[in-house]
Image 1 (cartoon, rainbow, N blue to C red):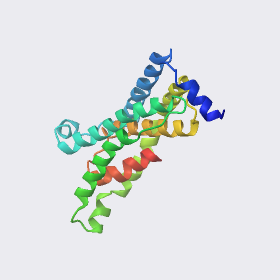
Image 2: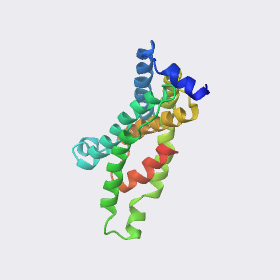
Image 3: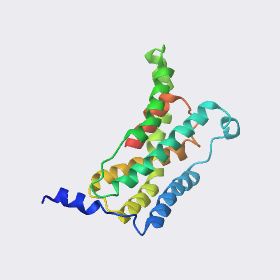
Image 4: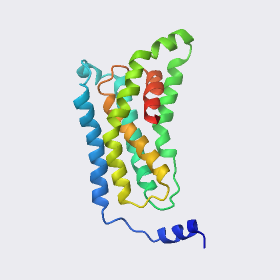
Amino acid sequence: METHNLIKLLAKDTTAPRSGWLYALLVLGGIMLAMLTMGLMLEPREDIAYAIKQPAFQGKLSIFFLFGLCMLPMMAATGKPASKLRVVLPMLPLLWLLLAASVHSLNRNWGSIAYELEWTDGLWCFLFIPIIALPAFDLFCRALRLLAPTELDHAGRIAGIAAGSWAAFAYSIACTHDNPLYLTVWYLGAILF
């Protein structure tokens, strides 16, 4: 019997881990730690009371909240031995963002698109989102260790993307840019970094 088949056979009768509450506590702690890290490093944008009423800001928050929420079941699935991942659920918020960026960029010339990317501010996104994600990534990896992932590199990648998505959600409270093209380039680039 091959090792892969043995793992499938042994994993077939797995029940919920006894430490399920600890797993949930670590994951929630990682999300809260990302929010706390953002709060310690940065402050919410100055016009937060006005921005919270704007559809662009609401869309930005909802996209990254949904992306982070969709990554949690995927992260739990990587903790099961020999699990097959379904990446459809986390892709829905990303497809929504890509569609919004595409519609936003229609009938624009390259000069205005390059101007809208705000390169200097975008580099700050590239710096802050991974820093905010580090504490959450640590707790997510500790949570995954409670389960039984067999593909550790894949589980680590998924935990990193999940931590990055929650860090992007936290950072979006401080960021003043609500442009879908800006979010697609800088936020997704920082998450995947």
